[in-house]
Length: 207
Image (cartoon, rainbow, N blue to C red; front, side, top):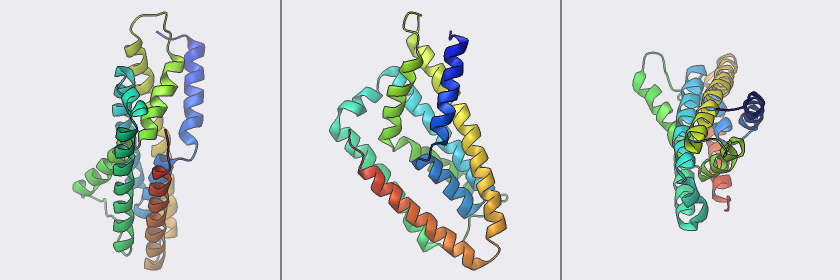
């Protein structure tokens, strides 16, 4: 379906784009630092799964609606900003508590859901998929939609691996750093401030 050189170039470009600091990457590392390596990996998986929605939307042309509709774009980014502010509020309010993921499945599911919502409610990701994936599609071959879906899923797998590693190692750093309750408070407040900054940055995005 794809030439080897095209696929190799796609993978190399994707790696660079994935590790460039952005809201999703910062969110993953923040969760790892604030709540440990399991939280970081779980959040990374949630963010990656959220990309399935954007891949399908780009392949089916739905992202074009978001790109051309100022009202819909504004609604989606506003919901994303509100959600980030909510996370900031929770981080600061419960700054003396960490999330214990040892055997508590519902907490893990909650972080997974947070990751999915964080990704879906960022219209910039939808536009990224709409503009990035078509550059590697061979339009002379049949089934362009299938090609975009395949490229999208390759990107999702790579995101899960790279974000997962970053979330895991930030969690290890957290375990070494947070030996005292005071450091836990500092990290949770810092996480809250980062969420506020991400919300403000999201609201400044323009079509």
